[in-house]
Length: 256
Image 1 (tube, helix red, strand yellow):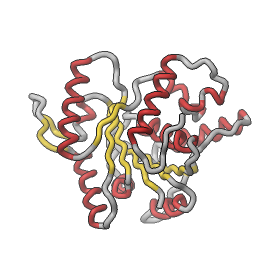
Image 2 (tube, rainbow, N blue to C red; image 1 turned 180 degrees about the vertical axis):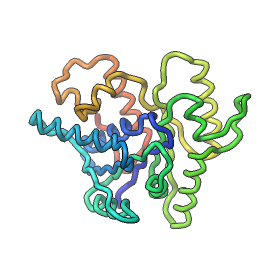
Image 3 (cartoon, helix red, strand yellow; image 1 turned 90 degrees about the horizontal axis):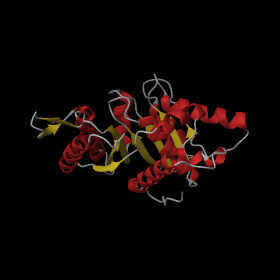
Protein backbone atom coordinates (compact mmCIF):
# COMPACT_ATOMS: atom_id res chain seq x y z
CA UNK A 1 0.00 0.00 0.00
CA UNK A 2 1.20 3.48 -0.82
CA UNK A 3 1.73 5.90 2.06
CA UNK A 4 -0.88 8.64 1.74
CA UNK A 5 0.06 12.23 2.59
CA UNK A 6 -2.78 14.74 2.84
CA UNK A 7 -2.16 18.50 2.78
CA UNK A 8 -5.23 20.13 4.27
CA UNK A 9 -6.54 23.29 5.86
CA UNK A 10 -10.01 24.78 5.44
CA UNK A 11 -8.59 28.25 4.82
CA UNK A 12 -7.10 29.46 1.56
CA UNK A 13 -3.75 31.18 1.22
CA UNK A 14 -1.89 29.08 3.78
CA UNK A 15 0.64 27.65 1.32
CA UNK A 16 -0.91 24.22 0.70
CA UNK A 17 -0.06 24.01 -2.99
CA UNK A 18 3.49 25.29 -2.51
CA UNK A 19 3.98 22.72 0.26
CA UNK A 20 2.44 19.96 -1.90
CA UNK A 21 4.67 20.74 -4.86
CA UNK A 22 7.87 20.85 -2.84
CA UNK A 23 7.13 17.66 -0.88
CA UNK A 24 6.21 15.63 -3.98
CA UNK A 25 9.12 16.80 -6.12
CA UNK A 26 11.59 16.37 -3.24
CA UNK A 27 10.47 12.76 -2.79
CA UNK A 28 10.66 12.16 -6.55
CA UNK A 29 14.14 13.68 -6.65
CA UNK A 30 15.23 11.23 -3.93
CA UNK A 31 14.16 8.32 -6.12
CA UNK A 32 10.71 7.52 -4.72
CA UNK A 33 7.69 6.82 -6.90
CA UNK A 34 5.30 9.66 -6.12
CA UNK A 35 1.74 10.39 -7.19
CA UNK A 36 -0.32 13.52 -6.71
CA UNK A 37 -4.01 14.36 -6.76
CA UNK A 38 -5.46 17.87 -6.70
CA UNK A 39 -8.80 17.73 -4.90
CA UNK A 40 -9.52 21.43 -5.47
CA UNK A 41 -11.57 20.93 -8.61
CA UNK A 42 -12.17 24.69 -8.97
CA UNK A 43 -8.80 26.43 -8.48
CA UNK A 44 -6.45 23.46 -9.19
CA UNK A 45 -3.33 25.33 -8.04
CA UNK A 46 -1.36 22.11 -7.44
CA UNK A 47 -2.50 20.65 -10.76
CA UNK A 48 -1.59 23.82 -12.65
CA UNK A 49 1.80 23.88 -10.90
CA UNK A 50 2.54 20.41 -12.29
CA UNK A 51 1.19 21.35 -15.73
CA UNK A 52 3.50 24.39 -15.72
CA UNK A 53 6.40 22.08 -14.86
CA UNK A 54 5.64 19.68 -17.71
CA UNK A 55 5.31 22.59 -20.17
CA UNK A 56 8.59 24.14 -19.00
CA UNK A 57 10.47 20.83 -19.40
CA UNK A 58 9.05 20.33 -22.89
CA UNK A 59 9.86 23.91 -23.91
CA UNK A 60 13.43 23.85 -22.55
CA UNK A 61 14.19 20.26 -23.50
CA UNK A 62 15.18 19.22 -19.98
CA UNK A 63 14.09 16.36 -17.74
CA UNK A 64 13.21 17.19 -14.13
CA UNK A 65 11.96 14.71 -11.50
CA UNK A 66 8.18 14.84 -11.51
CA UNK A 67 5.36 13.12 -9.63
CA UNK A 68 2.67 11.24 -11.52
CA UNK A 69 -0.47 13.39 -11.63
CA UNK A 70 -3.62 11.36 -11.09
CA UNK A 71 -7.05 12.23 -12.42
CA UNK A 72 -10.23 12.19 -10.40
CA UNK A 73 -12.88 9.82 -11.75
CA UNK A 74 -16.52 10.40 -12.52
CA UNK A 75 -19.65 9.57 -10.56
CA UNK A 76 -20.41 9.50 -6.87
CA UNK A 77 -16.91 8.46 -5.74
CA UNK A 78 -14.26 10.06 -7.95
CA UNK A 79 -11.45 9.54 -5.41
CA UNK A 80 -11.30 5.76 -4.96
CA UNK A 81 -10.58 4.79 -8.60
CA UNK A 82 -7.96 7.53 -8.88
CA UNK A 83 -6.20 6.24 -5.77
CA UNK A 84 -6.37 2.64 -6.92
CA UNK A 85 -4.68 3.61 -10.17
CA UNK A 86 -1.89 5.51 -8.41
CA UNK A 87 -1.32 2.84 -5.75
CA UNK A 88 -0.25 0.38 -8.42
CA UNK A 89 2.56 2.73 -9.45
CA UNK A 90 3.56 4.79 -6.39
CA UNK A 91 5.23 4.54 -2.99
CA UNK A 92 3.70 7.85 -1.84
CA UNK A 93 0.51 9.61 -2.88
CA UNK A 94 -0.10 13.23 -1.92
CA UNK A 95 -3.62 14.65 -1.85
CA UNK A 96 -3.85 18.45 -1.97
CA UNK A 97 -7.17 19.55 -0.44
CA UNK A 98 -9.14 22.74 -1.20
CA UNK A 99 -9.27 25.62 1.26
CA UNK A 100 -12.85 24.78 2.19
CA UNK A 101 -14.91 21.95 3.62
CA UNK A 102 -15.87 19.48 0.86
CA UNK A 103 -16.85 15.83 0.70
CA UNK A 104 -13.61 15.00 -1.16
CA UNK A 105 -11.58 16.70 1.57
CA UNK A 106 -13.41 14.72 4.25
CA UNK A 107 -12.70 11.47 2.42
CA UNK A 108 -9.04 12.39 1.98
CA UNK A 109 -8.51 13.12 5.68
CA UNK A 110 -9.91 9.72 6.62
CA UNK A 111 -7.33 8.13 4.28
CA UNK A 112 -4.32 10.10 5.57
CA UNK A 113 -1.33 8.29 7.00
CA UNK A 114 0.39 11.67 7.30
CA UNK A 115 -1.55 14.94 7.52
CA UNK A 116 0.21 18.26 6.86
CA UNK A 117 -1.66 21.41 7.85
CA UNK A 118 0.10 24.60 6.70
CA UNK A 119 -0.93 27.50 8.89
CA UNK A 120 -0.18 31.19 8.50
CA UNK A 121 1.40 32.34 11.73
CA UNK A 122 -1.57 34.32 13.01
CA UNK A 123 -4.53 33.92 15.31
CA UNK A 124 -6.85 34.30 12.30
CA UNK A 125 -5.63 30.93 11.01
CA UNK A 126 -5.31 29.50 14.52
CA UNK A 127 -9.07 29.98 14.92
CA UNK A 128 -9.64 27.04 12.55
CA UNK A 129 -7.90 24.77 15.05
CA UNK A 130 -9.21 26.12 18.34
CA UNK A 131 -11.54 28.62 19.95
CA UNK A 132 -9.85 31.13 22.21
CA UNK A 133 -11.06 33.47 24.91
CA UNK A 134 -10.30 37.22 24.67
CA UNK A 135 -7.65 36.61 27.34
CA UNK A 136 -5.84 34.10 25.09
CA UNK A 137 -6.99 30.91 26.79
CA UNK A 138 -7.61 27.89 24.54
CA UNK A 139 -11.26 26.94 25.07
CA UNK A 140 -11.46 23.88 22.82
CA UNK A 141 -11.07 22.53 19.30
CA UNK A 142 -12.65 24.40 16.39
CA UNK A 143 -14.16 23.29 13.07
CA UNK A 144 -11.07 21.90 11.30
CA UNK A 145 -9.72 20.11 14.37
CA UNK A 146 -13.13 18.54 14.88
CA UNK A 147 -13.10 17.30 11.28
CA UNK A 148 -9.67 15.71 11.82
CA UNK A 149 -10.98 14.07 15.00
CA UNK A 150 -13.87 12.58 12.99
CA UNK A 151 -11.39 11.28 10.41
CA UNK A 152 -9.36 9.64 13.17
CA UNK A 153 -12.49 7.95 14.50
CA UNK A 154 -13.36 6.64 11.03
CA UNK A 155 -9.86 5.20 10.64
CA UNK A 156 -10.04 3.54 14.04
CA UNK A 157 -13.39 1.95 13.18
CA UNK A 158 -11.92 0.66 9.92
CA UNK A 159 -8.88 -0.80 11.70
CA UNK A 160 -6.47 1.60 9.99
CA UNK A 161 -3.45 3.12 11.69
CA UNK A 162 -3.31 6.52 13.36
CA UNK A 163 -2.87 9.81 11.51
CA UNK A 164 0.49 11.48 12.05
CA UNK A 165 -0.58 15.15 12.07
CA UNK A 166 1.98 17.90 11.48
CA UNK A 167 1.02 21.58 11.71
CA UNK A 168 3.41 23.85 9.77
CA UNK A 169 3.89 27.44 10.86
CA UNK A 170 4.17 29.09 7.43
CA UNK A 171 5.13 32.66 6.60
CA UNK A 172 7.07 33.16 9.80
CA UNK A 173 8.31 36.75 9.64
CA UNK A 174 11.10 38.49 11.46
CA UNK A 175 8.77 41.14 12.85
CA UNK A 176 6.01 40.99 15.46
CA UNK A 177 8.00 38.76 17.81
CA UNK A 178 5.44 39.16 20.59
CA UNK A 179 2.64 37.83 18.39
CA UNK A 180 4.88 35.00 17.17
CA UNK A 181 5.55 33.89 20.75
CA UNK A 182 1.84 34.02 21.60
CA UNK A 183 0.88 31.92 18.56
CA UNK A 184 3.69 29.48 19.31
CA UNK A 185 2.61 29.10 22.92
CA UNK A 186 -1.01 28.55 21.94
CA UNK A 187 -0.04 25.92 19.35
CA UNK A 188 2.18 24.10 21.84
CA UNK A 189 -0.65 23.97 24.38
CA UNK A 190 -3.21 22.85 21.80
CA UNK A 191 -0.92 20.19 20.30
CA UNK A 192 -0.95 18.26 23.56
CA UNK A 193 -4.74 18.42 23.76
CA UNK A 194 -5.69 17.31 20.27
CA UNK A 195 -2.60 15.41 19.14
CA UNK A 196 -0.47 17.08 16.50
CA UNK A 197 3.18 17.98 16.10
CA UNK A 198 4.32 21.55 15.35
CA UNK A 199 7.13 22.41 12.94
CA UNK A 200 8.34 25.54 11.15
CA UNK A 201 7.31 25.63 7.49
CA UNK A 202 8.28 28.09 4.78
CA UNK A 203 9.07 31.73 5.44
CA UNK A 204 7.54 34.46 3.28
CA UNK A 205 9.82 34.67 0.23
CA UNK A 206 9.44 36.20 -3.23
CA UNK A 207 11.08 33.13 -4.78
CA UNK A 208 7.96 30.99 -4.28
CA UNK A 209 5.83 33.34 -6.38
CA UNK A 210 8.50 33.42 -9.10
CA UNK A 211 8.77 29.62 -9.34
CA UNK A 212 5.09 28.86 -9.95
CA UNK A 213 4.75 29.99 -13.62
CA UNK A 214 7.57 27.61 -14.63
CA UNK A 215 6.51 24.82 -12.28
CA UNK A 216 9.88 24.84 -10.56
CA UNK A 217 10.89 24.20 -6.96
CA UNK A 218 13.83 25.28 -4.85
CA UNK A 219 15.63 22.03 -5.68
CA UNK A 220 15.51 22.70 -9.44
CA UNK A 221 17.40 25.99 -9.51
CA UNK A 222 20.83 24.58 -10.37
CA UNK A 223 19.32 22.28 -12.99
CA UNK A 224 17.91 25.29 -14.87
CA UNK A 225 21.10 27.33 -14.81
CA UNK A 226 20.85 29.24 -11.52
CA UNK A 227 24.37 28.56 -10.31
CA UNK A 228 24.74 31.39 -7.80
CA UNK A 229 22.14 30.79 -5.09
CA UNK A 230 21.34 33.73 -2.85
CA UNK A 231 21.29 33.43 0.93
CA UNK A 232 17.48 33.48 0.72
CA UNK A 233 17.53 30.48 -1.66
CA UNK A 234 19.91 28.57 0.60
CA UNK A 235 17.79 29.30 3.67
CA UNK A 236 14.63 28.19 1.83
CA UNK A 237 16.29 24.91 0.79
CA UNK A 238 17.20 24.32 4.42
CA UNK A 239 13.56 24.89 5.41
CA UNK A 240 12.52 22.24 2.89
CA UNK A 241 15.19 19.83 4.15
CA UNK A 242 13.96 20.29 7.72
CA UNK A 243 10.35 19.77 6.66
CA UNK A 244 11.08 16.46 4.89
CA UNK A 245 13.12 15.33 7.90
CA UNK A 246 10.33 16.32 10.31
CA UNK A 247 7.74 14.37 8.31
CA UNK A 248 9.62 11.17 9.18
CA UNK A 249 8.13 9.27 6.24
CA UNK A 250 8.81 5.52 6.01
CA UNK A 251 11.92 4.64 4.02
CA UNK A 252 12.85 8.29 3.36
CA UNK A 253 16.38 9.52 4.08
CA UNK A 254 16.95 13.16 3.11
CA UNK A 255 19.66 13.32 0.44
CA UNK A 256 19.52 16.89 -0.86
